[in-house]
Image (tube, rainbow, N blue to C red; front, side, top):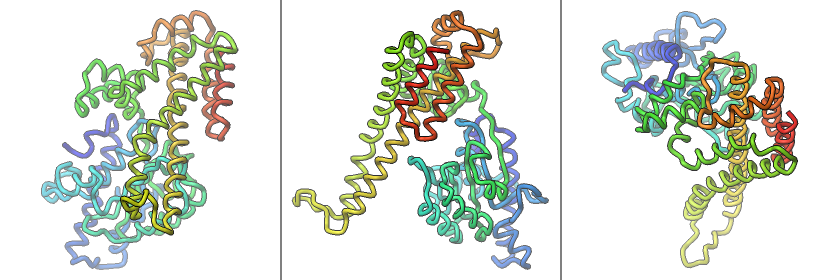
Length: 422
């Protein structure tokens, strides 16, 4: 299996990355053939970190900084990890002219499972990535590869960098260390500082076709074809959400509850009750994550800090700060989980009204929520397209309010009242 096999519906991007990995391999091989000391300063620059801008790519397909953009679920992080594996590929077939990224060699395998010493994959379960974490990354990027062909930093949530963190990263991207490659992922260009994106080569991914996502769920995860097709259609090609919907009964139950909301907001009381239920469901998601991870993290830290058995669980002196830092991180993660869960519910709600609008306009596009078609037809028959558009706008406004840190209950209550008014 090649590293690109799970990159669904992105043949153009896979082709570009394969070509870049070939050029990267040529650069490293040429340096090795020269005894590790390039013949000239120009050769040193090329073999170490090809300083090719996105604006004028030149003859090499390889460069030191990449920006992967695309809608949620398009596979940005999967593409970056696959490229990282191809850069570390040591397959004998590669040396004989085969494309890097075999998927089987030690370089590919350890990269894909997250244990390669020269590949750092950074993702966050918090609301933002701060200056301290970014400085740690930059220091890591200054190191020479320990045993691999490149030092690769995959930043899956580049859109969550604070302004200060972005400025710290900018210096590293402007003046890359020898043989270091930055792979940044974000939903869109606008989510990254202009000074950073201008120094990266851009790759834009598209939403994968529904049929391709369903095929992946069957092939990779062993999901029954009918369930895979239903999950892929319901999430409109969002790979991770489709997998969760197909494998998690609780996720299916929460989605079903969200799709009943449009039928329950006939009066003010119904609006307020529906809003509270959405908030409660998001809070329950955060609690579930906390139960699965917080206790384990806390016990592991206590053991690492030397909390001896038989002492009533007391921590040694001077370690309270570390425990407080962990608790603060867990609180921030709970906030992020609750917001993500709520945003997912709003996405499902917007998809419902999108299907209503399609029915009202007689569109031939495939409906995402065929499992609630009776409700779709009832809402479509009882309103006009203009009213449906206002409802979609109300959902969008709620998502924007949450991004601005408006109190979640107030934002959702305002949305449900607007949905009722239409």
